[in-house]
Length: 512
Image (cartoon, rainbow, N blue to C red; front, side, top):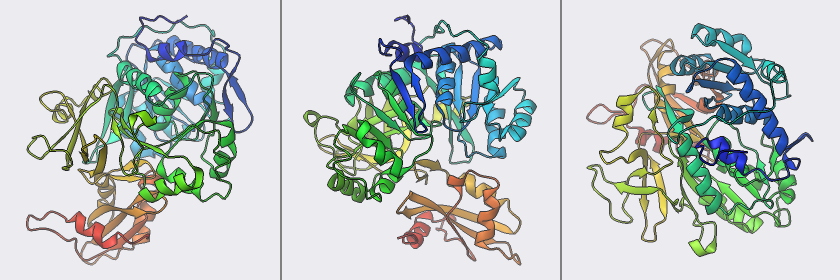
């Protein structure tokens, strides 16, 4: 039994498991079935493995593996044993991993067997004492060692403000920041969403088709299912045909806008296929009104769009029930229960309803600060404790929140954050490059993609495709610009600042 006085997030998730532990908890796309008892036993065994390593409270477990049920079990085990989970995007390359491991100083690193040849030396050089492998075919040294451990484990006692996870979110200066999320942050958000989105124990089934290295797939989706005792249909990779084929077996689906666009391209997506569905949720990037309306026309369902961040988990949501109001395309709904949201002008004064300004938030879901960056943390909070999201938006007369854009040129491509300064830094280091600018432009599939504009040094001959090719060996694929143009100079204002708005305007129809 779990201790009701234990603030450990795992204790809350475990307490919600159904009484019949032999019932199906997860069904994979390749025909494997995991019971609730399997989740309990496997997370206990991995937790015992971590404990046996002699880790200290607060030690980090960094994980860069492909999506699998076992990877989820590793996450649950880390929570259960009271350590700090550090998920890393599977697309990250050597320079990126070297920074994350060096900055977070994890006690344990888990990677794929395919990447162990370059990840392990980086971890060892950074002083990480334990490196394991985990693959998406239920193989790897982590499982081999865990198999020798007991399947009984007492959940570690945690306080509400103890760290549960660190999520790295790149800064506009190019330096990534580790957002520190506590057990209170994650647990409070899971409990609020369970009620707000009407999760039904024993009646709901979630199709999980998202990656599990960021907030959407790891926290919102997995926590939502587990804390309501709802089984999951688990797809290691998104396949629109497969998702549509499984809709009759499910009730809830979560996706980024790109997934909805791709499903709309499937002729098998019909009202009949969606008959048993209760809820479609979209987030991580703006949902085009065109997609919102096309989905409603095609399926008879209205997508619920919500808004959150790595630093805050979920902040707002369109209404689930008609009693709360209608779901409005182009908005992200209302602040969730317990969340305070306000809009301020450049001087920090309140904006009247309908006026655009800077969005600031407070609540139990707002993170504890940036890892080992006290000055940056202080900068990002107001004197009265509100977090400056960096988003620009407005609240209308009825209370609906609309996000207008990002305040620092952030590009959101296919649900992933792309920070221009980081990519510009890599381009500017290339031979023959004088300077560069990266801007986001509309894209029918990804919502937004990066376009690089590069100025060569005098006498240097540059080709756009060669610049893109050089970036592919250094950066995750979602960060790679879709096009690169070589120009004599960048447009600047009288203060010498590059006019990115003008560049965006010039290239906005590139993928129309």
